[in-house]
Structure formats: structure tokens, C-alpha cells
Image (cartoon, rainbow, N blue to C red; front, side):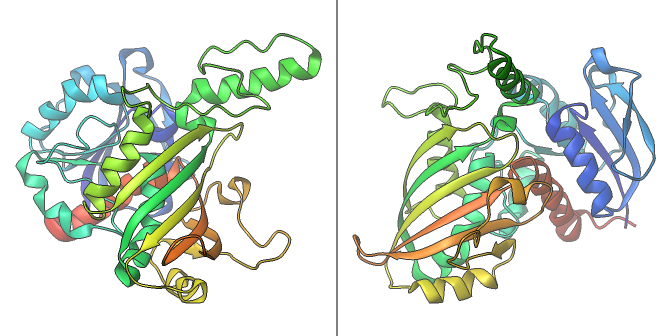
Length: 341
């Protein structure tokens, strides 16, 4: 079984990572097209470490007829134009933008958490990839929810600058360099200096004082995991290049000891438990870069609430938070629905 696959937005951080992961996981591809804007047309890009070079095509002129699936990493504005065009041509779109996540006719998928929801993709021929901070959190929450039925989640995120794209990574690098040599570190991409600082503001502010990033974590967790779960989030940008971290506090209907939670997480799909309760016995963003897993550490009981747990969760946001999850959706789609010879 092999598929004709498109990667749209192949020159960006997430698009390049999609290509890397397709190659690493040996996704069954009979033909691969890489698309970007007209600025990159004709350029060549590596297909992971296969040694194969791929020529960038202009998405505006690409005909999706006869292609099986397209992994989109082109932002909401371009997705609004091209996703319906691809879907109408019979090419299933797996979209990394926020455009379709809350559309009731578009499944929002994390394969370890709600694989059965993919069966609804035919309504629009589009499948949504969740927000990076939501994706890793629900992977950690799902097995605990199955065991103890989570009722409330309080999460504080520590999100790397790669979540803001290449411009965010460039700004952290340039500001850090400028500070060391005594030059000004003026913010451009971010609202305040990010080097040697933290910014409690990701995406735009809403009327209730929360940001759109925080709102995404609330509504996406409900759609993916359980609409009855109450979620409140504080999302913070930190001076880390790659890897999102989260401090998660959980309240459940049924009591679950820290030891029981550790046993459950140790066996959970997509989770890697590293919880030694000693110096260095936990995972930080540096260790998760380039890895597939969602890492969980610092699992402990919260005695201030009934049936409470607290934990620390870390993942490569360009991988599980974006590209890896999209490829896992493609694998799931192939297994359950496309099955081409």
C-alpha cells in the first residue's frame, strides 16, 4: 500500500519536519509533491536524510486531482483558499492551522487519544491537527481520564519560540547575541524582549482576558477528550528554541495515587515516563528535541483538592505538536480508510 502524498508549506519549520518524519517512519509513498508559495518555486529541499532532493512547486498552480492526501502547514489564510480546493478534488487534507479545528464537520485528531473520530472525515474531506500545546497535554491526560475520569485541569505552559515560526527563533537568537555584545534587543515578533525573559501572552487577547492560545487549549481539549472536562490555561512564551513544557494540575472523580498514575502512564501509548524523584530525574525541553514521545515527569498527588494529581509534561512542539501528529493522522487514515494497493 502506497499513497500519492502532498506536503504544502514544505519550506517552513513544520513542513520540513513533516518531510523528515515521513522519511524516518518510512511512510508508504508512491509519489511525493512538495509545495510552497511562488517565492520558493523551483528551489530544492531534502526529503529527510534519504539523500533525495525534491523540487518545490507553486501551490497556486498545483492540481490535486488524483492525489490521496495533503499535509498542510501553510497558515489559516492560505488554507482557507486551498483546502476546499484539494478536498473537492478528492485529496484528503490534514491541516495544521487553526482554521477547521472547531468545525463540527471536521474531526480534530490525536491518534493516541481519539482515533475513532477520524471516521467523520468524509463530511468535508478535511482532518484538523490540534494546537501544539493541546496535543501533548491530551496524550498525557487520556490514560488518566480513562482510569479516574478527569473533571478539571489547570495548566500553565512554557512554550518555545519555534511555536512562533522561524521569525520567533531568529528573534531569540538575535536578541541573545545583541545582549552579550551590548547592542539593543528590541522586540519585533514578540510584544516584549524574549531573550532572558518570559512573556505571559501568546496570540491575541479575548474579551474575558484570556488569550486565543489559552482558549484553544480549553475548547480543543473538550472536543478531543471530553466536553465535560473544565480547563483553564495560562500560556507563556519562554526563551527556549524547541520544546514545549507544561505544568498540569488535575482533579478527578475517582482517587488515583501517584504510584497508580505512574504505572498507567508507563504503559500509555505515546507517553514516556521519566520520574526518578532525584536530581535530573525528569525531562526538560533540551532532551525532548527530535523525539517522538510526550514525556511525563514529577507525577505527584495534590493534597489541596480531592482526587488531585500534578505532573510535568514536555514534548517537541515541531514533532508531536505539529508534524508528527499530522503524519500519525495520515497513517491512521491509510489504515482505516484509504487502503490503496
